[in-house]
Amino acid sequence: MNDRRRLFSWLIGLLTPLVVWAGLPITAAAYDSGAAARYADNWWNGINWSWPYFSNNDCTNFISQSLNAGGYSMVNVGSTPLTDDNNWWATWSAQWGWTNTNSWSVAYNHYDFELKHYPGGWSNGTRAGTDVGATVNTIGDLYFYDFGDGYGINHASIEVAYGQDPNHTELTGDLVDAHTSSRYHAIWSLRPYNAWASTTTVYLIHIDPANH
Amino acid sequence: MQSRSWASLVIVSAATATASSDTVQIQSAVRGALTAQLTLEMPPSNYHGGAWTDAQRAQVDANIDQVLNRFYEPGAVRDRYAAALHRNVAYDANGSYRYLGGGIDDLRFDIVAINGDTANVVAVGTAWNRQGDSAGNVTAAPQTVNRFTMMLHRSTAGWRIVSELRDYVSGDRP
Image 1 (cartoon, helix red, strand yellow):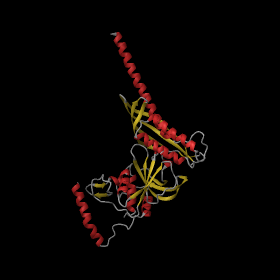
Image 2 (cartoon, chains in turn orange, green):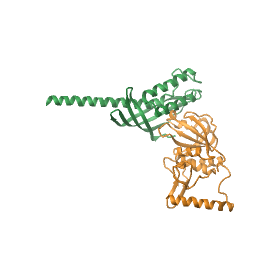
Image 3 (cartoon, chains in turn brown, yellow):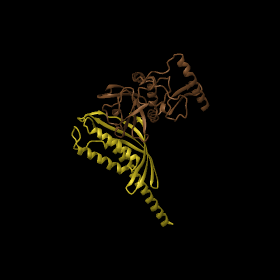
Image 4 (cartoon, one colour):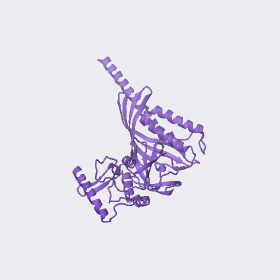
């Protein structure tokens, strides 16, 4: 298995300069947060079968797809171990199906990836689970949730707009889309949807626009 | 033979009573801890709207620590709940939001296994809260069914929780 992945990485390294020489664009110039948000808005309540799907646990896979749709390229594709949070990728092969790093599909590992990766993301601090006030995050940024359930950070969402939560119109602020529970333009802390808001902490990550 | 039988019966009854007493205490500690997590954020009884006074906030903050200490051993589990609750209270104190209440209903104990001074518990219950605007009108009422897996330790202060995991079974999941 590892030999195959090393071969795959070698092929990518060999082919990439050839593609560049041919003038084919392989990466966006910068992270397009608007494109990431549009992807999230398109797929908040659906499954894009061009990607892996994790039933009952799809939140991080969803934000990874959104980031990639915004031009945030995968990092160290094919490298192992899958638990190394310096890497972020998901690939499909006819032989193995989908293979992905933990950082692609597990909330804490993606949080860790953003902090490890350069330019990656940087922390915009933590907020209370009952907080709904304006944040310093912007469209295309990420929120990670520790519900106080003993599992640490285990949920993630992506900011897509600033406005009114359609299900709780008394709340106006930074809005997110998410999977696992399908959320469209929900207030960022998810307070009105969270029976355990009292024990929840939200971690804010800003995605550097230099990611491409 | 008859006196030995009676003695055996007394010994078994005493042991059973002790186990039952421990079970009751453990269940009470678990129920108390979960209820505390869902109610300690409430403003004090003398709060009638607007920003909290410093005294009101100090009262609630002190109560958070006092009540958590009753149900949790000192350590990471207690500290994570304390940190989250204090952070929430700090936000709530601006008066724009009111945590109206919460609780745990239909708590069912599937496992209470006691081994000396250690107990392992698995319980299922419905957690809920009521969220309101500054006037106290209910704006949200999420609820969820969770499975709680806990370990408790018997100390001189009684049975207290040393580890706790919460999993979703059904209902609202953020």
